[in-house]
Structures are given as structure tokens and as C-alpha cells.
Length: 108
Image (cartoon, rainbow, N blue to C red; front, side):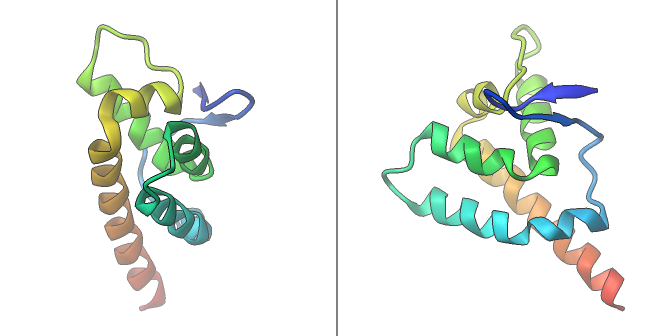
């Protein structure tokens, strides 16, 4: 399934599970965390950072779709407007925990 993630970004949306390939996005996670700590960062800037992390995009859109079955959620921007920073942070921290476990398992 191809999902629109912004004005010109399209990615294939999977099941949202973590894979070893997702470990390459660690720097993007750090950038997103810095952005979330910036009081002047607005929705568009946060959406740009989320769009750099495909597995996070998938989870954010899935969360928004579960929350509102009546509205069509097609973009990260729409999803973030619905779930807010709190929903994003929940997905982000859960994903970071899963990636930490995956990295530990791969290194063992």
C-alpha cells in the first residue's frame, strides 16, 4: 500500500513492525527529538522530521486512523493534527524502545 506522507513524499506503508533496516534512522530520531524540544517548531517542521522515518510514519497514520474511523487520514500532517504531540511522543518512545531491543538482540 502506498501512502502519501507530505506534499511530495510517498512511501510504502507496512505493518509498522521494526526491522534491522530501521536502525539507520537513529540520527533522524535525534533530529525529531530536538525539534520536539524546540518551542518554536510548528506542525509542518515536525511533519518533515517524521516523514524521514518510514516506520514512524506508518505508526502515526495507523494511530490516527484507529482514533478516527470516520475521517480519511492520508498524510502525516493530517495524522499529527489528530493525535497531537502527545500521540506522536507515545509512538516515538514505543518505537525507540523496540529499536533498542532489536539492536541488543542483533548485537548478542
